[in-house]
Amino acid sequence: MPLDVKKLSTHIGAEVLNLNLAEDLTTEAAAELNRLWLEHLVLVFRGQKLSQEDQLRVTTAFGEVGPLGRPAEFYPKGYSEILENIMLISNIREDGEPIGALPDGDMMFHHDMLHADIPHKGTILYAIEVPSEGGNTLFANGYTAYETLDADVREPLEGRMAFHHYHYGSTHIGDDIGTPAFSESTHPVFRTHEETGKKAIYINRLMTESVVDMADAEAKPLLDAVYDHSEKPEFVYEHVWQVGDLILWDNRCSMHGRTDFSETERRLMLRTTVRGESAPA
Image 1: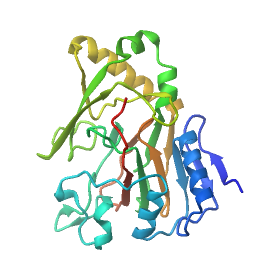
Image 2 (image 1 turned 30 degrees about the horizontal axis):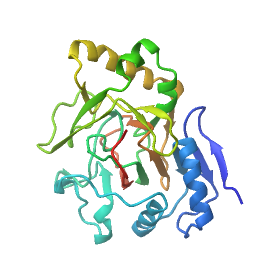
Image 3 (image 1 turned 135 degrees about the vertical axis):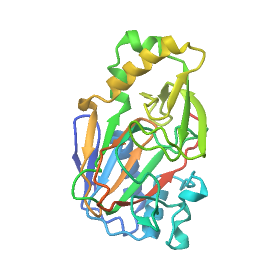
């Protein structure tokens, strides 16, 4: 039986209805979810009640679970050993220190792990605690943004590589204070998805520093034009979180950002990733 699905916006996102992820997925259901993931880029599952083991099992339906990819200081604190490959995204503090990564504020659009040589291809985020307002996640379709990008901007960047740099502690707009830990990489400005064969914009404001072998004076206005275009509201789905929401997104062809929220309200998410299989091309 096909899964019951509701589109969430014109260009990106679908909610999968009436599926309990705490139960084992059949081979047929897992295959259909993978097909839907490639079609919609972002899948939303509401009302889930999952253990840590459940989330790891769900992640394996889409590939191998990715390592945390963070310095040890961002490993979870006070949770069971099963969380070896689960990252806490949280502003909750113990002894004045956040128990998780990316604790506060808004966050610019980005692709997860773009700063790695082989980025993780997917991310799963599960909501345990959410603020009463804000902390929404915005998802943008990189396929549509590429297909509608003005030729005067696209053509000078076609076939080019971009350099990416990321400080693990840097989260929100205007934040220039990072932890000493960082990672750097070089990837195509426009990535060809290895499963769909479609091209998507693969640069973002948070991590992309420059275009390889292009003068900054020429590259900067082109990059800014791509960012402005790819973040247009018509390409974006904004998710307002509820406790029990689980979202899977494809990092190869979408980017995401976060809206601000009150530092006085708790936010706790559990994050897993799907390991990438090869370097972007």
